[in-house]
Image (cartoon, rainbow, N blue to C red; front, side):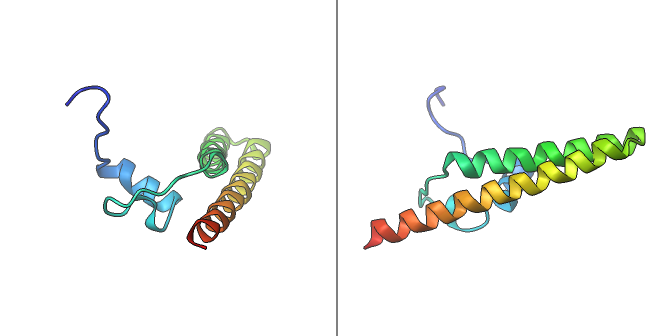
Length: 94
C-alpha cells in the first residue's frame, strides 16, 4: 500500500469516530463529507474531557469546570456542523 492510499479504520479509533459522528458518515463505501465544525467540535469535546479528568486527578475544581464548559462548547459546535451537513445534503438531493 503506498502512502497515498487510505487505510480503513479499525479498532478503538473507528469506535470513537463512529461515536463522535453517528450516522452514515463511515458506513460501507458511501462517502459523506465531514465539515470543519464537526471536527473542531469533536476535538473540543475530547480536549474538555481530558481537562476535566486532569482536574479530577489533581483535585482542581476550576480545571474540572473548565473541562465541562469546553465539552459543552464542543457539543454545540459539532451539532452546528451536523445541522450544516444535513442542510447541505437536503439541498444536494433537491
